[in-house]
Length: 328
Ligand SMILES: Nc1nc2c(ncn2[C@@H]2O[C@H](COP(=O)(O)OP(=O)(O)OP(=O)(O)O)[C@@H](O)[C@H]2O)c(=O)[nH]1
Ligand SMILES: [Mg+2]
Image 1 (cartoon, rainbow, N blue to C red):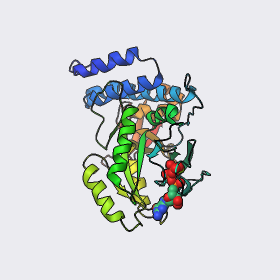
Image 2 (spheres, rainbow, N blue to C red):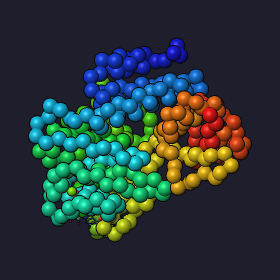
Image 3 (cartoon, rainbow, N blue to C red):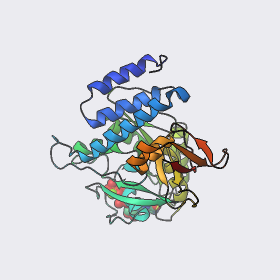
Image 4 (cartoon, rainbow, N blue to C red):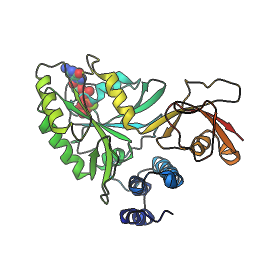
């Protein structure tokens, strides 16, 4: 254990040890990971924290959310990441999920159309990202389980209707989230430690930019929140800005895509192995096969800024686009 860990780290570790639910454990581990200095000496520790986060996330997904009144939902994470839609009624959340995925979803011009969460898979380049359509934040019946789903998502997509006052909408959304102890953060690392509060990466999508008052409303939204969170302007109906939004989402997921190859063969670039940013050769081996991880002697890497076929050790930190050949 490096001696120079800040006191907040030990505080977070204490919270981790006393955490009862997998969600609480994930929150504490994420705080520990954010606090831990990033250098070679902490590579292994950070990898270990990431492994534990993944384990508890899986646990959280398997576990039925017990003890809640009424119906409750668990949306199993699939693909490269889970994005939950957040907003007031009629913003166009369902229209977005229905447009970008194959999910069968109801879209209507009256508020509170969506009653249950519905996932769908969105394609982005050679990967799939899961979008989860949600009831509006102000839906009282959904309240008991909404918070659980938001905490489990990797990124929140806050949707604003640019036909209406954007700052009033943001104010209402932030106050609902505050009540659920969810705080939004942008692209920067989650370096704040607030006990019991889930820090969630979020982007804001101003939708309906085809409407006549949308330009001015987008400007107000951007100038009030653009320094804290990524803000994009879209029209789901006209298909505008959607590619840029997908890229912003991808960037927020903190993932890399690496490719495996066998000796003498070419890598299959359509089948990436998806890993958290900062993952090592060892992490990649483990995610392909347990035997690989156990028997791995060394690996060879192809990628930018490396010698072709450079020999690397188990702890080597991978970069987006690297091609790996395992030797066991
Ligand atoms: N002009 C315009 N209208 C849109 C756009 N996207 C969605 N709408 C309309 O907005 C209305 C609400 O869309 P929904 O997708 O049902 O909204 P929602 O956010 O899911 O609403 P709730 O389920 O009540 O929370 C529908 O009439 C859509 O056709 C857009 O880009 N431009
Ligand atoms: Mg809806």
